Amino acid sequence: MDAIEFESSLKRAGYQNIETKKVVANTSTHPHSHDFSVRALVLAGDITLTSEGQSRTFRAGDVFEMTSGCVHSEQHGPDGSTYLVGQKT
Image (tube, rainbow, N blue to C red; front, top):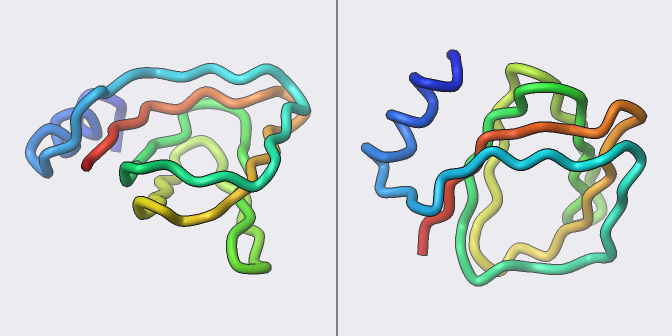
């Protein structure tokens, strides 16, 4: 799925605040949560998400989702990451 198709699918599913985010290399976050759900398509680089003791790495072409309130941390790879993301409350 390309970015245009993915953005259309986000809109159809009721996601808002759709934007492309670019994160610099080797950035990590402390565990946190959001008051909205997210769905994202990785466009470049990679991001590892850790939640409930499980880590999973997503690379270009992969889609990830996080539900509202899900406590997670992020680790962006050596080339950073770029992803198209939408929020749903």
